[in-house]
Amino acid sequence: IYAMKKLLIFATIFLLAITQIQAAERWLEGYKKVLVIGAHPDDPETMCGGTILKLKAMGVEVVSVYLTSGEAGIRGKSHEESRTIRQAEARRACEVMGVRPVFMTQIDGNAEVNKERYAEMLALIKAEKPDMVITHWPIDSHRDHRVCAVLVYDAWRQSGYSFDLYYGEVMTGLQTQNFTPTLWVDITATHDKKVEAYMCHQSQGMDEVQEYHDAMERMRGMESQTHHAEAFIKQNWGK
Image (cartoon, rainbow, N blue to C red; front, top):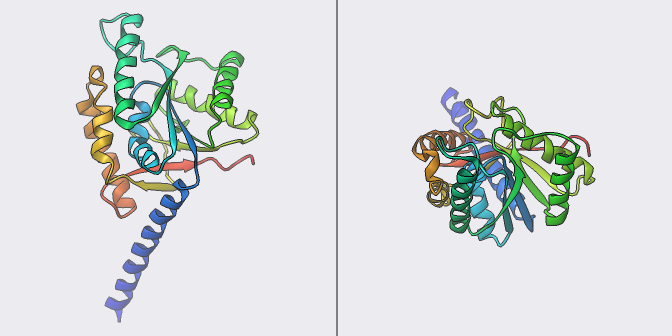
């Protein structure tokens, strides 16, 4: 009897996990245009490249938005030199994923929150007219990530909640903090293409990033009964 009860418990947990993943796939089907807004070149790709590829396969328009151009991201290079290199890497990554890149005007390592920057983010989102936006979780060790999240959140409110807002994770534990996801997307089938996309950022030493994110994706996969998964939190408060 005890063994049967234990088996039933495990079966119930497994079925709940499968239902959760299926619900995630149904969630993705409802959107027409998605903006993924990251603080730096490589953030959208590492945060949710697998999900981007799934959305593209479903016919969804996806735009990869970069708050900065990674100007401070290459040691020994000027901001102008780094910007040129990193924008080129981002364009190659976007070609791999089949998405359009957009570069905003903030500076890597010196991203600002003020009324002009609030207006800039709102104007971009209003011009693109997405029905979903994915950006950084706001509790993060990197200031630029926090700034990006705050600007997008404010645009969500100022636009009258005109799009669904989701938060993703990057290098959790080192950068993203206190992230407890409520939604998982199975990226097992798109994992290799995601890696191909973010490895375009050769100036950033992506081998270490790959090792970190692969462990994250396997952990999220274990949580959701898949091999590799990306995880998200939906912003619900305030509607």
